[in-house]
Image (tube, rainbow, N blue to C red; front, top):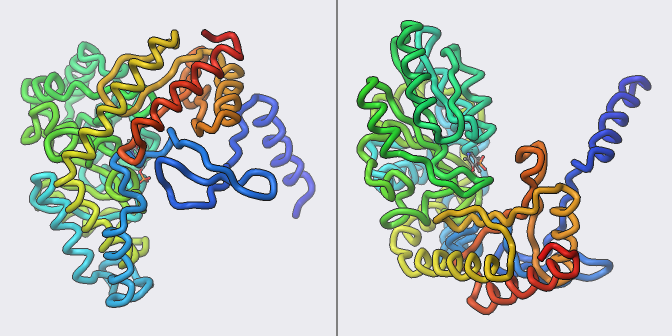
Length: 400
Ligand SMILES: *Cc1c(COP(=O)(O)O)cnc(C)c1O
């Protein structure tokens, strides 16, 4: 390789390390779950896992695994084709219909990931005459997807409805043909829920469409896990929902857009990540159908994950930590300083609790935190153990 190019790359890596931003991957030697085996020295050790998006605890569910195995026997391992050439099995349409029924939409379209769904959804639907008005804390894939479209971009501060209204007025003044407001249903770093009723009201007033990316909600929030539109009671005002099969709904992989028939039909013709990327594997499609069936009926798992969240919140604040308020299973423990967040994560690791520290650029400078996530795969004893470990580690580091 060209020497100066290699030096350039090496210098970038050195800078990432020097800035304390280098991400190392931990090796897990077990299925995803409330407890996982992590590789440690020459062996493994068990830790309580507070950082997966496995809210309903379905990632190792035996019925989902059985459905996936059966699909491999009946439908093979891979599709080796995009959908429109020779990559659409009955399973793919079954999964799309299952998603659409679950979320109360006409139809749904599958992507390899929600990153691709968000990357592909805007460009075919909106042109240079149109406006996309996006919350400033929206997921990276929305930001990228908006960039890939020709529509004019407007940004409002996180959940600031006054700013949203200003942007809607601005878009009207600029002569926008169509306006689309786009927001995450749950903002994953803070665990805050979008103010969908206020957004719906503004959308009505200004004649705008609404898109919600509900990755951190579908499956565990709202009635039967139908997500933030159901939770906030404005489901029929949301025009487009994007979501993932990689979090609550079994946690494997894949994303989708659910919407009116005409929107889905046009995306099938024009969405680039759909047209130019391989079909989901049969095992993933079949396992995800089973996961949605289980999720829809999983009131007890939803109750558990919310009960764990309330228990953990109460225990951690009683111990003297600062929390962000909220009503989701995402519970950020605020440490402000990046170094402190990393030290705390390491101290928790030593005490058998697996967490992730988040710091700049993922969250603003001075807002470093440990983001914990509850799961129905945890037991009450696991939650109590984790609270005890936080207390012990917090005292050892002089944080509480
Ligand atoms: C996780 C996430 C995505 C990406 O989903 P994948 O299916 O993993 O690509 C997109 N948007 C939001 C809000 C997410 O939390």
